[in-house]
Structures are given as structure tokens and as C-alpha cells.
Image 1: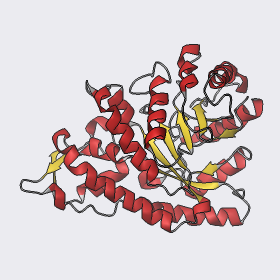
Image 2: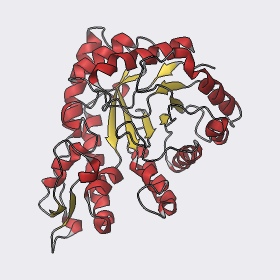
Image 3: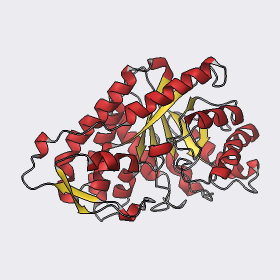
Length: 352
């Protein structure tokens, strides 16, 4: 069956949350289930938002100072515990996500009351996994010592946010990118040995979201300069991760977005979907929306649609509906490209 809805992975390169929500609602009037705030402003470059929080922690000292202000990943600062600092006594500062999202939720509620955002559409928030920020900013030999306390701080931030939003209005997405870099051994050899620990940590993230609120996973291979840290050879690892998290979590995974390289048309890439063991109610989304819409005809995704349908038909749950998304967020797309990208979502769904 053709794709019947759209999913947004979070970031959208527009001026502010209201602009993001108005543009999405006007350009994608059907098939919209959740709407993000675009991660605008200070959150515009994913985990760089957490850097200032890490630098506020008295027990951390720099090993490598911050790099250029434009935020090159290879120039991230590295921090370590100060001599004599006890990792068990680290007290993390306010991580900032709850406050940012509560401000955006007020905009969402006002736009819905005005009829701009359709009734029934949820307000979607995105959190990095705890491992993402810790692995980015803490020296490798001390990451495990600080991971648990940072995870508790991040979960507490999410708890505060969800306590302030009606459960029927919210949806939570966990951004799973660093984990794939480890499992694909893109950062260092031997990462495949971490599979069980990574699946368990992702299950904890999913379980942190109350059952009444959809909890999703964005399975991501990065998007620095519209390039992945590795072009995945197939969906095999993504399916394996989703299956493992589904088995380990105490609640269902509500939705998931799969990375599909933009020019991928090989049957072997999609074939692992036949082994999907996720709950039949888990919403599936595939990255069939290219970042550069110029000259892209809606029908060019037809081969991918047929391959996805064939693989899903062979899965234990049989064929099911699914949706489309971009490979990553749209935070690094040119601002002038955003309207065309949003229109392309609508056109692909309309074209089937």
C-alpha cells in the first residue's frame, strides 16, 4: 500500500517555533499526526545545545577547549572530571529541554485553538539519548562513570515536561544516532559488542515515557553536510535494533523512522523488513524525502514504495500502512529549501 502519512524527525531550519508549525500545517494539511517545534534557536544543532550545560558543571574541566563557534563536530570540546571529583556526587544543572518545549507547547496550543494546527495532531518533542551527549563531551575513560547520573538528569527533565502537558497532546521521540555510529564501528572497532547494552539503554528511554504518550525512535546515521557517517548497506541493523528494543521495553515503541539513503533502490536494502518483529501497532516511517527537492518528481519514489511493500508483506505481521520522512531532521537544509521540502512530503503522499 502507498504511504499514507508524514513524520518529521524534529529540526526544521526556520526562524522560530511558530513559523515551523504554521509552515508544516499549511503545506502538509493531510497525513499529519505529530508536529515538532523545529528545534530552533539554541537547539538548532542537536547536542550542541547541551554543551553549555556541561560547561556549567563545576566538577568538569576541559581537556580540549571548544572549537570554532560554527560548531564543527570534529572540534567538540572534551571534558573530564577534575582531580579528586567524585562522579557519584556530580549534580547536573538544568538541562534546558523542558523549559524550551514548554514555551513551544504554548505556541502549539494557541495555534490549535485558532484552527491552524488540526485537532488530533500531537506536539512532538525530541530528546537525544543520554549516550549521545556523554560520548560527545566526556573523555572515553570517564563516560561510564557519568552516564548514569546524566541519564537520571535527562529523564527528570522529560518527567517535568510531561507533567506539564496533557498526555493526549504529547509525543516523544528519542534520537538514536551515536548508537549506530558505535554499532557500525564508524568511530572505533569492536562496537558491535555493545549491542545488548545499547538495546537495554534504548528500552529504558522508551519506558521513561508514560504508556498514554506515544514514544518513538529516530534511527539515524547522521547528517553532517548531508552525509552519513556510513552509508548503511541494508536495513538489517536498524531492524535488529528495533526488534531488540521492542523485546526489552515494558511498553510498545509507538513509531520509528528508518534511514534510507536517498538513491537506494536495491531490493536487498529493504529485504530485512521481512524479519521485523515490532508490534503491529508500531508506526513505520521511511526516509524517502530527499533533501534537495529541485527537479524531484513525486513518482521517483515508486521503486522504493514497491520494495518496502513487498518486504513488509513478507514480515510476520504482513502488510501494513507506513509513512515518509527525511533521513534526518531538516535543521541543516537551507532555509530557502524548507518550503519545497515540506511540499514534497505532501506530493509524495498524494502521489502514492
